[in-house]
Image 1 (tube, one colour):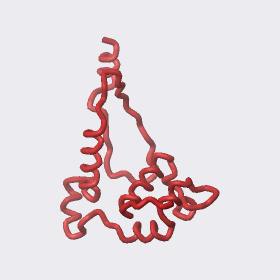
Image 2: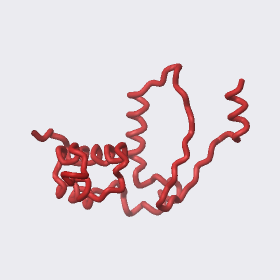
Image 3: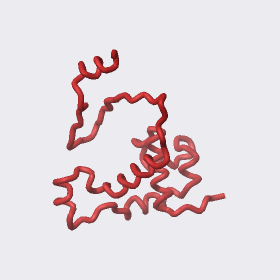
Image 4: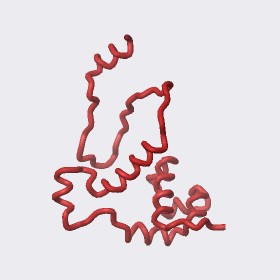
Length: 130
């Protein structure tokens, strides 16, 4: 039984699941391996189909890429990211027992931007004590 999914959407689901499972460092041959790969990858589509889609899909318009990238670092994926964030906001409603915290994650690759907390550390600790 193979579910009838639109192939690009199925591929995005596989890539998302790969991130959730922290398998993003695996090659496609290992992702579809019978011993190493999670069964949902093989159940969704064949390895050759996923490689074909990864080679063919492009989320960015090449002619205006440099201009948009100078303004927005996420320009290549901005449209998809905006849709994803809109769907997250419309499908998740935080309640009164939500805790917001920050987490620093190490990046092995090149990262062209840095993000900092808006508040100095002592302001955050003072706010939590009151």
